Length: 201
Image 1 (cartoon, rainbow, N blue to C red):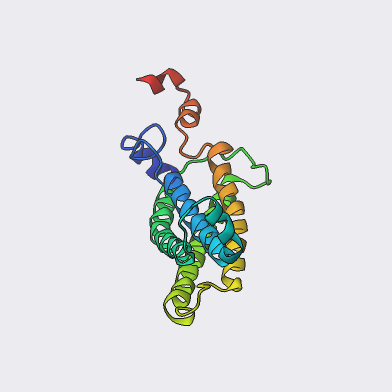
Image 2 (cartoon, rainbow, N blue to C red):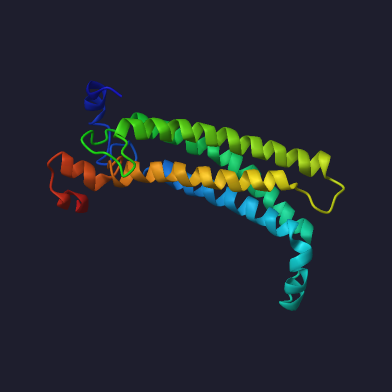
């Protein structure tokens, strides 16, 4: 976003550079991550259920294999839905970002490069999560609906691969906040030459 437009918006933006008190994107990111991780984790538990069944029985936990797959499916579906909002708010908040241009991240990237990679990565992850949800749906309702094991190995391996991509992508997002001060209230106030005691008002 151009500096002139940012200057015009400054009267409407809070001390964190956003029109609302708490950035929404980071909170939705953690919801996306949690739902996706739970989905794949419960599907893994469902796949290995025959080996774990004695443990559940010993602990008197009433568990059935289909319950784990139900949790996997509904969490994957919720992850896909939430990720649209995660990416939407991420794009909006990135447009309002005014990072410190004199800083390089631990990975040697400047602020604009980091924002570009984080933005493109977010859209790519959205596509991957939606693709995984569609794949999961076909397995649940068509390809493996009559099988005890509702997911195939390729799906689980792909899910673990997406975990790795999420780690790299999340690190870029964390660098935007911690190293470039994007939408961090204290950082923005300091760069504007204001006293941090303004936070208490």
